[in-house]
Length: 435
Image (tube, rainbow, N blue to C red; front, top):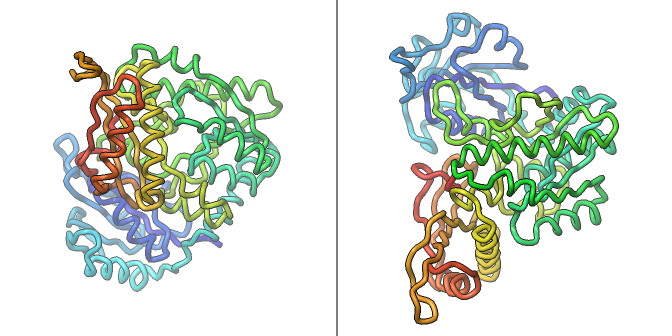
C-alpha cells in the first residue's frame, strides 16, 4: 500500500526531526529534504500530500536568507510555514515547543484537514513496501551484509532474509573493537540458532594496525568505515555474483552527518566513510527510520526481544570510546570496564529501563595511590542516557549504591585504572558518544 507523505523542507531549523516524528506519530509518513529541492525531485516523491517549510536559526547561509524555490510555491500542494521562515503559505504554525498540545493540534489539522492525508504509516505497510523495493533493486542477484549483531544490522538481516532469502550472505567482522564476548555471541545466535549464511572474519590486527597513532575521531571513523568496505570487497571476491552491500544506516546517521543548512555533528562510518571506489551498490532499507522505529520494525518482523532491545552500539565500536589514539592495553581496560558496568546494571534491574550505558577511557592518566605508592593510571568515565530517537538524550539518575559498587569493581578488577567518573551531560549540548 502506497503511503501518503508530508515533505518537510529544511530552511535552517533545528526541529526538523521533531516535527517529522510528530507527524509520523499521527500515522502519516514524512521525509526531510533540502530547501532547494527541484520541481523534478519533488515530483519524483510518491504520494506527497503537503509541504512544511521549516525555518529557524540556521536560515541565513553565507549572509543570505534561504527560502524554497518558486517551483515549490507553485506546485499546487498545501503549504505550512513554521517559525515564519517562508514568504507565503496556506497555513502558519507558531513556534510552539515540541509536545505542546496546540502544536500537535495544528499539525494534525494541517495533515488531515488541509492535506487530506491518510493515516497509513505503520510497520506492516513499511515492511511490505521495503520488501517490494528490495526485490526490485536486487532482482536475482546477491547481497553481502555487514552483520554486527546490533539492532540495526539484525533488522536489516531479517528484512533481507524475508525479501531475498538465500541470496543474502552475512559477514561478521571482528575488528577488535567489540564488547566483551560479542563475537562469540554473534556466531552463536546467527549461525547456530538462526541458520544464517554467516562468514566470520578475524581482522583484529588489521584494524588496530591501521588505527595505530590516529587520534582524530573523524579520521578514526573514516579509517574504520573504509577498512570495513575493503574487508567486504575481499569477501565478495571469494563469492560469486555479489553486487550489493547491505547496511544498517538509519535516519539519525544521515541527519547528524550534516545537511545544507546544519553543520555536521559527526560523520557515521556508513554515511561519511565510504571510499570513492566503492564497488557495491548499497541496500539501506532502514535509512528513513528513527531508532525506536527500527526496534518496532524488528518486533513486527518477529525478532526476539533480546535482539531488538539490545544495547545500541556505534559502528566504530569501542574505537570511539577509547578516546584519542587507540592503544591495546587501554582498549582492553575499556572492554573490561564496560563488561562490569553492563553486568552491574543487569543485577540492579536497569537493563531495559536505561536506553544506553557504556564506559569511556580518555588518552591521559591521572595521579593516584596503589599499594602505598604513587601511580599514574587512566580514568574511566561512565555514561547512561535515555532517549527515544537518539536526537536528544537525558542522563539516567543511577542509584548511588549501584555507582559505588561499579566503581569499587572497576578500581579493583581493571588493570591500569585509578578513577571512575560519571558523565552528567545531556544531549544537547553533549552528544551521546564522546567522539
